[in-house]
Amino acid sequence: MESTNNSSNFIKHIVNEDLKEGRNDEVVTRFPPEPNGYLHIGHAKSIVLNFELADEFKGKTNLRFDDTNPLKEDQEFVDSIKEDVTWLGYDWDGLFYASDYFNEMYERAILLIKKGLAYVDDLSAEEIRAYRGTLTEPGKESPHRNRTVEENLDLFERMKNGEFGNGEKVLRAKIDMSSPNLNMRDPVLYRISHATHHNTGDKWCIYPMYDFAHPLGDAIEGVTHSICTLEFEDHRPLYNWVVEQCEMEATPKQIEFARLNLTNTIMSKRNLKQLVDEKVVDGWDDPRMPTISGLRRRGFTPESIRNFCREIGVARSYSTVDVQMLEHFVREDLKLKAPRTMAVLKPLKVVITNYPEGQVEMLDAEINPENPEMGTRQIPFSREIYIEQEDFMENPPKKYFRLFPGNEVRLKHAYFIKCEEVIKDDNGNVVELRCTYDPETKSGTGFTGRKVKGTLHWVEAANAKPAEFRLYNPLILDEEKEEGKTFLDHVNPNSLEILKGFVEPNMSEAKANDKFQFFRHGYFNVDPKHTTSEQLVFNLIVSLKSSFKL
Image 1 (cartoon, rainbow, N blue to C red):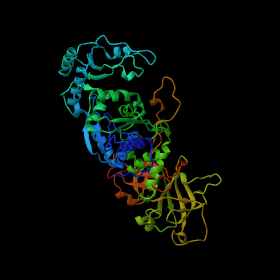
Image 2 (image 1 turned 180 degrees about the vertical axis):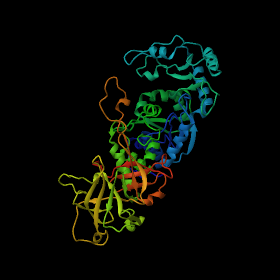
Image 3 (image 1 turned 90 degrees about the vertical axis):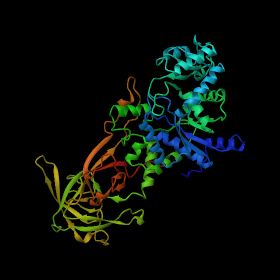
Image 4 (image 1 turned 90 degrees about the horizontal axis):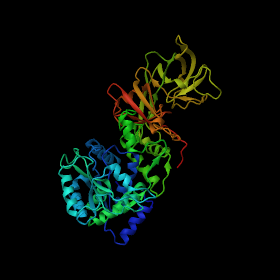
C-alpha cells in the first residue's frame, strides 16, 4: 500500500535525522496490538502511521501480537486483527507473537538476576502498590530486595516450574525505589498465572509484563522506531533500561504521539468490551461501534479511513477530532462509487387514478450522475407507488413544497402528480392518497409547460422489494461527567432506529457490503450479518450532507 500523504511530521523528521546520521540503515516499524479485543479507529491511526512511515522510507513493518496475558487474550481477537489490517489495505513483512520469544525473555530475566538487577519478591500486589510511594514521596524497599543471586535464580526457576500459586511471587527489576518516575521503582517483570495461553498452551505458568516484553520484542525483531501513544512517555526510561541491561544487540528508539480522540466516541477497549458483554450492542462489529469491524459493517470504506488518518496527521499534543471529519471522507469516497437508487423508508401508498390499470412502463435513470461511465438503470412505474409519509401533509405550513391536497409535485425520473383525495382509516390516520398524473410531463422529454417546486422519490408498489433500514445516531452522548455515573449512563437510548420499507426491484441482486446512495436519504450499506435471501437489511453509513468543512 503506497501512501498518498507526502506531508511531513515530527516523527518523519526524527527518522530522517537517524538515517542521515547513520544510526539506522533501514527503517523497521511494527504494529503491536494485544489480542484482547477488536481494533478500533484509534488503532487505524497507528496502523496507517506505522505501515506508511516504513513504506515511505522503503523499510519494513511487522505485525506483532503482544500476547503476554493469557487471561484476557483469545484466538478470535488474533484473527479479527489480521482481518482488519488486511482490509485496511496493508501487508505486514513479518508476523510475530511476543509469546514466540518467551524462551529468550526468560533467559534475559536470568541475565538480570545474575547482574544483581532483578529479584524475586513475595509481596502481594497490594503491598507492592503500598511500598511504591507517591509522586511526592519515595518508595520503600521490599524486605526481599536483597536476596542473593543464587536464591533468586532458584526461586525464579521454581516459579517457572509451577511450584507457587498465582500471586505468591513476582520477579521485579532492581532499579531505584526513590526515582521520581514511579515506573522505575522496581517494576514487576514477571508474574505467575496458571492459565492456558492461546499460542503456547500450558508450557508456561509465568508470563512477562508488558513493560518487559515489549522492548525485548522490538529489539529481537530489529525494530528501529517504536512508535506509541503519549501515555507511554513515562515508560520510555524503563523501555531503554530493559534494552540496555538485557544487553540487546538492537536498540530501538521509542517515539510518542498523541492518540486519536473523537467526539461522541468511546476509544477504550475495556469500555467497548463492556458494551459487548452487557449486550448494549450486538457484538464487536455492531455498526454503532468505533471498531474497524463495526465501521466495515456499517459501510465505511478502507480508503475513507486511510484518508481520514492521513488528514488528521500526528502531533505531540492531545486534541479531539470531530467525528464529522471521518464522515466527510466516506462521503467523498462514495460520491463517485455508489450507485444511486430510490428507497422509501416510511411508506405511504399513492394510487394514480388516471394511469392505465395493469400497465407497467420502464423509465431510464443514470446509475450515478456524477460518474456517467456507470451507465443507466431501468425503474418500473405503474398505477400504484409508495412515497415517504413525511412527503405528504394534509394541512401544510407555508413554504411546504411537497404533496398536499390540490398541490402538484414531480416524481423523480417520472411525471408530475397532483393530490386529489386523501383516504384515512377509522382512527383518522392517512393510509392512501389518490392522485392524477400528467402524461405530458415525463422526465427527459423536455417539458417546459409549467414548473413545480417539489421533487419526491418513490418506489413502484407491485414490484418493490421489502427492506429493513437501520438508522444510527451516536452511541454515546458527550456530556459532563457526573459523580457516581459511568460511561454506560451516557448511552444514547435512540442510537438505533429500525424502519420497514421498500427499495427498487433491481436491488434484489444487492449483495452483502454493497453500497448505495438512496435519493434524499444518504449512503447505505447492505448489512452482511442480517441480510438474507428473503430480507434485505441496509445500514445508514452517513447522511448526504453535513455542515462540516475541512
